[in-house]
Length: 145
Image 1 (spheres, rainbow, N blue to C red):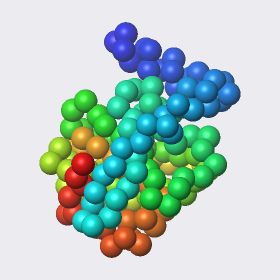
Image 2: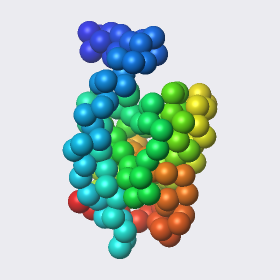
Image 3: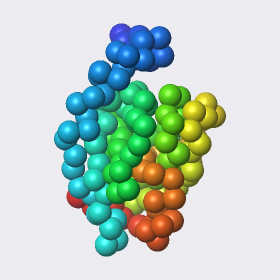
Image 4: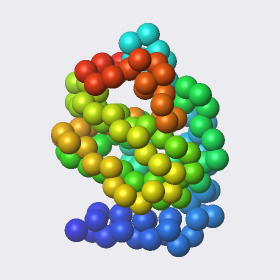
């Protein structure tokens, strides 16, 4: 319950104090890792804490062509994403614990409509809208480090 309360406080802080949120996520862009899907590489920031997952790609004005953000959850579960304070059109892949892409969806800037995973997933990968299609990456492909 305490953890949930802290998470709610974090969300309220991000919503109420966007300048603070921008400072919180400023350091994330400097620590990129590489993932491979088929023969394509994507350079990712890892969102592996509640704070990083809550901030996501909010307040970013651009995302480089082959960059993205990998959201890592503690256990596989159904989840949802929205585009609050996110101005970049994105595509999202929901990925299971084996690294298999289970679902790909498009997300519109500033859209508050949740995008739900249909399956229990351990990861979600956000990239520029159309990146998966452009790179001929689809459901069933495997994400590797």
